Image (cartoon, rainbow, N blue to C red):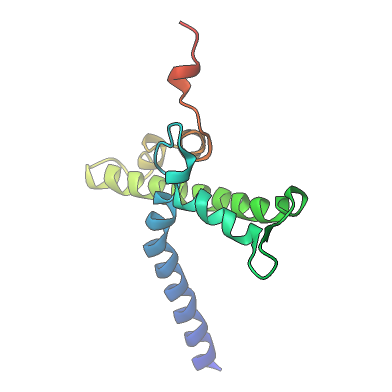
Length: 135
Protein backbone atom coordinates (compact mmCIF):
# COMPACT_ATOMS: atom_id res chain seq x y z
CA UNK A 1 0.00 0.00 0.00
CA UNK A 2 2.85 2.40 0.87
CA UNK A 3 4.43 1.84 -2.53
CA UNK A 4 1.25 2.95 -4.32
CA UNK A 5 1.14 6.13 -2.24
CA UNK A 6 4.83 6.79 -2.97
CA UNK A 7 4.25 6.18 -6.70
CA UNK A 8 1.28 8.54 -6.73
CA UNK A 9 3.29 11.22 -4.90
CA UNK A 10 6.20 10.82 -7.32
CA UNK A 11 3.78 11.01 -10.26
CA UNK A 12 2.29 14.26 -8.91
CA UNK A 13 5.74 15.73 -8.39
CA UNK A 14 6.78 14.78 -11.92
CA UNK A 15 3.59 16.33 -13.34
CA UNK A 16 4.24 19.51 -11.37
CA UNK A 17 7.83 19.70 -12.66
CA UNK A 18 6.60 19.14 -16.20
CA UNK A 19 4.06 21.96 -15.95
CA UNK A 20 6.69 24.24 -14.43
CA UNK A 21 9.15 23.41 -17.22
CA UNK A 22 6.62 23.80 -20.07
CA UNK A 23 4.77 26.88 -18.83
CA UNK A 24 7.31 29.43 -20.13
CA UNK A 25 7.07 27.89 -23.61
CA UNK A 26 3.25 27.97 -23.62
CA UNK A 27 3.26 31.56 -22.39
CA UNK A 28 5.82 32.51 -25.06
CA UNK A 29 3.33 31.49 -27.74
CA UNK A 30 1.09 34.39 -26.76
CA UNK A 31 3.57 36.85 -25.26
CA UNK A 32 4.48 39.03 -28.20
CA UNK A 33 3.01 41.92 -30.13
CA UNK A 34 1.04 40.94 -33.21
CA UNK A 35 0.97 44.36 -34.77
CA UNK A 36 -1.17 44.20 -37.88
CA UNK A 37 -0.17 40.64 -38.84
CA UNK A 38 -1.75 37.94 -36.71
CA UNK A 39 -0.21 35.25 -38.91
CA UNK A 40 3.19 35.59 -37.24
CA UNK A 41 1.74 33.90 -34.15
CA UNK A 42 2.14 30.11 -34.03
CA UNK A 43 -0.87 29.70 -31.74
CA UNK A 44 -3.23 31.63 -34.01
CA UNK A 45 -1.95 29.87 -37.11
CA UNK A 46 -2.15 26.52 -35.32
CA UNK A 47 -5.75 27.18 -34.31
CA UNK A 48 -6.66 27.14 -38.00
CA UNK A 49 -5.40 23.57 -38.46
CA UNK A 50 -8.42 21.82 -36.84
CA UNK A 51 -10.64 23.80 -39.19
CA UNK A 52 -9.25 22.14 -42.31
CA UNK A 53 -10.86 18.93 -43.49
CA UNK A 54 -8.10 17.37 -45.58
CA UNK A 55 -10.06 14.52 -47.21
CA UNK A 56 -12.88 16.86 -48.27
CA UNK A 57 -10.49 19.74 -49.04
CA UNK A 58 -12.79 22.26 -47.33
CA UNK A 59 -12.71 24.48 -44.26
CA UNK A 60 -15.12 23.79 -41.42
CA UNK A 61 -17.98 26.21 -41.02
CA UNK A 62 -17.60 29.05 -38.52
CA UNK A 63 -20.34 27.47 -36.41
CA UNK A 64 -18.10 24.47 -35.72
CA UNK A 65 -15.14 26.56 -34.60
CA UNK A 66 -16.37 28.01 -31.28
CA UNK A 67 -15.84 24.80 -29.25
CA UNK A 68 -12.22 24.57 -30.47
CA UNK A 69 -11.48 28.23 -29.81
CA UNK A 70 -13.28 28.09 -26.47
CA UNK A 71 -11.09 25.16 -25.40
CA UNK A 72 -7.90 27.00 -26.39
CA UNK A 73 -8.97 30.18 -24.59
CA UNK A 74 -10.02 28.26 -21.48
CA UNK A 75 -6.67 26.47 -21.28
CA UNK A 76 -4.82 29.78 -21.71
CA UNK A 77 -6.89 31.39 -18.97
CA UNK A 78 -5.76 28.62 -16.62
CA UNK A 79 -2.15 29.00 -17.78
CA UNK A 80 -2.24 32.76 -17.16
CA UNK A 81 -3.54 32.28 -13.62
CA UNK A 82 -0.98 29.56 -12.95
CA UNK A 83 1.80 31.76 -14.35
CA UNK A 84 0.67 34.64 -12.12
CA UNK A 85 0.73 32.31 -9.12
CA UNK A 86 4.29 31.23 -9.96
CA UNK A 87 5.38 34.84 -10.39
CA UNK A 88 3.87 35.77 -7.02
CA UNK A 89 5.63 32.86 -5.31
CA UNK A 90 8.93 33.99 -6.88
CA UNK A 91 8.28 37.58 -5.71
CA UNK A 92 7.62 36.35 -2.17
CA UNK A 93 10.81 34.28 -2.21
CA UNK A 94 12.83 37.28 -3.50
CA UNK A 95 11.41 39.44 -0.71
CA UNK A 96 12.42 36.83 1.86
CA UNK A 97 15.93 36.60 0.36
CA UNK A 98 16.19 40.40 0.58
CA UNK A 99 15.53 40.16 4.33
CA UNK A 100 11.81 40.88 4.46
CA UNK A 101 9.99 39.34 7.40
CA UNK A 102 8.21 36.02 6.74
CA UNK A 103 4.76 37.56 7.36
CA UNK A 104 5.50 40.80 5.50
CA UNK A 105 6.88 39.18 2.31
CA UNK A 106 3.45 38.14 0.92
CA UNK A 107 2.16 41.66 1.57
CA UNK A 108 5.09 43.22 -0.25
CA UNK A 109 4.97 40.90 -3.30
CA UNK A 110 2.81 41.59 -6.36
CA UNK A 111 -0.72 40.31 -5.89
CA UNK A 112 -2.61 38.04 -8.25
CA UNK A 113 -5.02 40.94 -8.79
CA UNK A 114 -2.18 42.99 -10.29
CA UNK A 115 -0.42 40.22 -12.20
CA UNK A 116 -3.43 38.62 -13.93
CA UNK A 117 -4.92 41.76 -15.57
CA UNK A 118 -1.48 42.80 -16.83
CA UNK A 119 -0.98 39.39 -18.45
CA UNK A 120 -4.53 39.29 -19.84
CA UNK A 121 -3.90 42.60 -21.56
CA UNK A 122 -0.48 41.53 -22.81
CA UNK A 123 -1.35 37.98 -23.89
CA UNK A 124 -5.03 37.97 -24.75
CA UNK A 125 -5.75 41.22 -26.59
CA UNK A 126 -4.53 42.59 -29.91
CA UNK A 127 -4.45 46.26 -29.02
CA UNK A 128 -2.10 48.41 -27.02
CA UNK A 129 -3.70 50.43 -24.22
CA UNK A 130 -1.38 53.36 -24.99
CA UNK A 131 -2.86 53.54 -28.50
CA UNK A 132 -6.41 53.52 -27.14
CA UNK A 133 -5.94 56.26 -24.55
CA UNK A 134 -7.42 59.66 -25.24
CA UNK A 135 -4.78 62.40 -24.78
